[in-house]
Length: 361
Image (cartoon, rainbow, N blue to C red; front, side):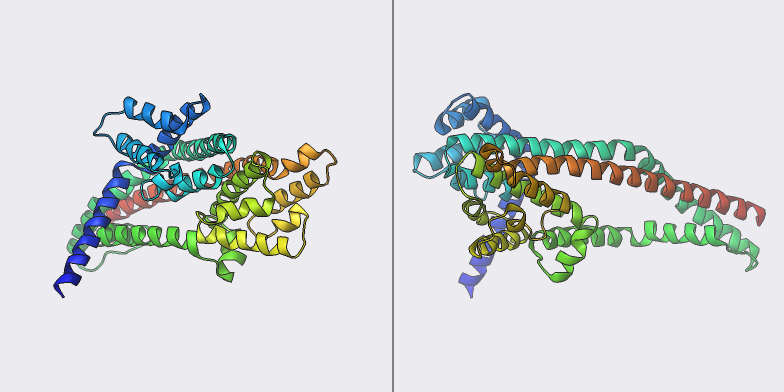
């Protein structure tokens, strides 16, 4: 019993230690680290030399120094960068290194550049969405906060009116929002946080028919599917174009470090290849790629020029980025309109509530 308790304590300590590591070395910092590592590799430094350079560049107390030290230790033991990254870096980053290292230095450098460009695109999209939403969301927050004193004033007027106070839609809304803020706010925040964690886990692991046939066609799962497709297709395309692998060999290389959701689609590609479906559009028609990308693959694979055929998967992945940028613009416009609309409704509601209170005061 005592041994079990000790094991539980050790496991808990390990989890806390891991949580604190990723808190200090978040995904954004990891991408910056990989970008810096790639700058050395692109300057024809060996992996060992790149790690040594990073060790010189950072303070020994920094997470970047500790990460580089672990990578250097992994290399000195005859293991790979991907081996040293496991447990210290996000699975997506480990996957990039793991899937490329067997195909040579050239593939690794190209995949790193592609990964960095992709992460830069995602960061740019987040920024382009958050900037125009700051104003309406801030003003909405202020209006939400004012529902508390308005509701208190309403209660005072109602007590003086001795039951003759008449409620309307705006006063009901004001009181309801005030209740949430004063009574249920911690619970609401907890529920939103718990649901966010659950849906993130669900997005990475679920391969149910409901998820694949319905949720993947609608926001936000559609966006997750598109990003997963770009990440997978880019890596596979580079392994085919730069590493000289067949599409089947390439997807088998990325299988181990992919999410369960991606593995489901990868396994379908492998099965399709085993049936003799050599057309790229048929091979990758698993439900992960959108119709436009499948059409591009069909057109590219029919081109007579051999170099275009070889680069077809990579070209389709890069074109897919343009598709998602166009889709994102529509989503951004809709989000901004909804945010301002919500602010407008709340402003009108508060104004009507105040007028209603004052007329019955």
